[in-house]
Image 1 (cartoon, chains in turn red, brown):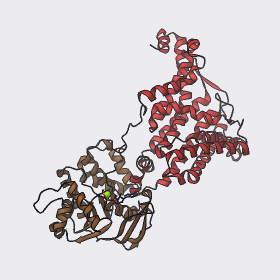
Image 2: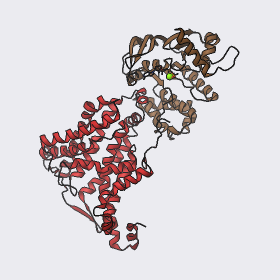
Image 3: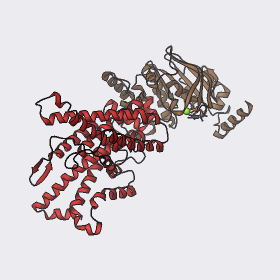
Length: 326
Length: 263
Ligand SMILES: Nc1ncnc2c1ncn2[C@@H]1O[C@H](COP(=O)(O)OP(=O)(O)OP(=O)(O)O)[C@@H](O)[C@H]1O
Ligand SMILES: [Mg+2]
């Protein structure tokens, strides 16, 4: 029995609270991983390449929200007297959509010309894009220390003895909505075309699907997801704004992607939640073993899980072993 | 309806694969295109449907007209919208998607929901076995069911011309019969058909006209009944000697080699 379950078995009020708090914290991390992982997976499915520029999209998405919400105050300046949560949320939508358009542009300028080139080259190109994007935005606009000035600040809600920041309640709601919206999208005409293209480009073209347009749309979607993740990475309780460190958060979603399966959007969500809860439970229940495991084991437990998964089930929980080209 | 004139195709800028072939598919007819492995049948299909580019192929000469319009350089999706649909060699089901989603992908160019519904209904009536397996993952269907699925997928586009590339490949004789009947059925609904086959027997028994190509050239064309009786065709494309005995693959290969020395 794991220490977590042992402690739960004693079932006194405080340990139940501790468990619930751990779960909430785990979900808070896990939903961010899920958002990040979905972005990686959608690009991977479309191009068989890990998009190393995803982190830059995360940082730039949050940065654009900061610009729109704080510097430009759009649409708040045209809506005097409107509730702050409303104007800020609208600003966030505008910022995230701008980020999406950047994704569209990047695809058109850099990725589309690489269609048909060796995958390794495409991967390296995304590494280059990541560095260039982060540097350029940082140099021109100053990425560091831009607060997003969300209306919830550090306020919290209390359920029994469990404390949840308001920002995290928003995050749960937004993630649930995003996942549901994606599920609906993937059943739509365009969504099915995207899945068809991901599976077999030539067969998709034979149906009259314009795969170039589908690639552009994938990058738009993925940049949206990155921006949404970027917001929650940059506000309380995780950070006090966008910084050059924001981009690196994306790579912490790797264990979630491997666990869920590189080519499964469902896997990205499930993997994200599992890794989030694993990290959170490790930080609560494994502290007693710090002298054996070393402090901060919770930060690497995701990678430990990832390595075990790679050994036991390399294509992850939901990944396809090789249905392709049956 | 479709006319291919003097078509020349080159792969990778150097490999000349089609050396000036011409094909006519008249309105409402079934035309068979036969040829051994590597003759250039699939290349012809790619040229007609605009999918040469991902194979690094180019049309270097000749023209393709569809209903009088020059489509030689047209975007592939436009050609599908014009009414040219294809069933690709090797089936190419979208194995990870369900049967229904495969059909939905096929209907991509069809924006009218009522038309999609009508096509879907027609496909389900034509292939009752697909109707039983709507939500099944396409990759787990049997070979015969997959062939029906990709034919159904093409029909979702409401084609005027349907091009099938070796639909009998790898199917048991009974299923080949079934595919043949399906093609006749589709044609009877007013769809012109270009049927690419190595199974000359299957194709020539339903075709209105037959072409035989070899090494990127048309070597014979004419009335299917006459082609079926032709000794050369019998020997090299039906795999039968005059005695009716099956010819082995090695003999056919040998023939090809011999031919190359001659040319
Ligand atoms: N992408 C390519 N690059 C270079 N050569 C190619 C390419 N695709 C096909 N070829 C060559 O072109 C010739 C014709 O090929 P094609 O696939 O059109 O023949 P086919 O008649 O369809 O044969 P099969 O019956 O085996 O399907 C072959 O010699 C083949 O090797
Ligand atoms: Mg072929």
